[in-house]
Image 1 (cartoon, protein in one colour):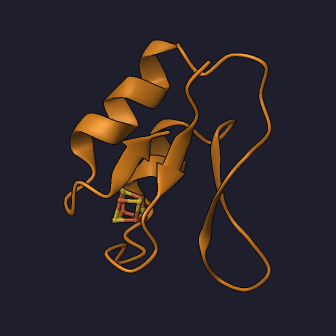
Image 2: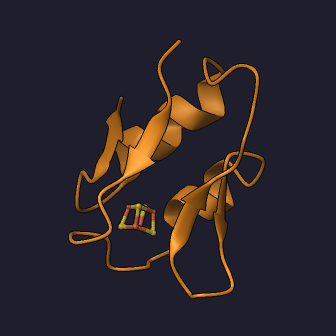
Amino acid sequence: MKTPVVDLGSCILCEICVELAPHAFQINEAGFVETMPLDDYSDENIHEAKKNCPKDCIIWE
Ligand code: SF4
């Protein structure tokens, strides 16, 4: 199964992904976006987050 991973080098911390899919993306203690461990990343909110990332830095791995 594929996991959405944030390219931290491109991320501008706009938090759009966190707003659209808070179950999948959170700001961690270090202040970076982190993908939360889920069994399934196929839901629509995660795809919306990827689509709406202004830097296009959420990638599937
Ligand atoms: S939407 Fe993209 S640029 Fe914005 S915080 Fe999330 S990963 Fe970073």
